[in-house]
Length: 248
Image 1 (cartoon, rainbow, N blue to C red):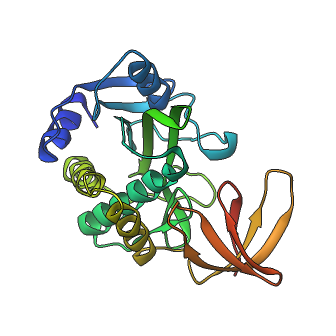
Image 2: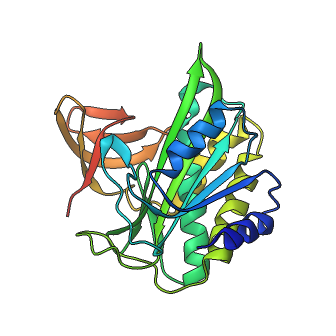
């Protein structure tokens, strides 16, 4: 993408907050967090052509081919209880999958909690960061990385050579529409929307907790706070931070 394309995508979605672009940056999320701390308004959009220290969930590294991905971060200031912030990642994932499917005709789906999948290969991912004080959410940054070119990373792929402007604009528009829905309808709407395009629900999975405990079962539902419910031999378990492995 370019700075002009980033601005055009924001305009397609009707967003009026400031747009920040760099050809190369360490991390768009780090840039957006700095802006949020400095008081940047909601919908501030940060983009880059390449990240040198891109990050993923659970401390992973996000690798991109320079100029071959859509890399953005969005500043939000939601009126949500801290316990429901996981729903924002699911909403962003659903909005990206819908926009990518519409733009390419390919079936892009969501793996819980933050991956975008194409034919069992990762085509994109999200990373949410937030500031919470006494259960009051001050800001949230939603970072997105979506591959257009194949990044030549095992298990990953790209969407192909498509115009990034309507793709990003479509994501922003879909996300903004869902984000504007008032509570409590918001919770059910996000869960229903994500579940419709899930690559995880109905599958046998292994949930790996931070302490290494592994639980195997079938992913059966998303609860109203965004947790994945896994039906195990010992009964249903709702997980919020586990690593989920799809089993064949």
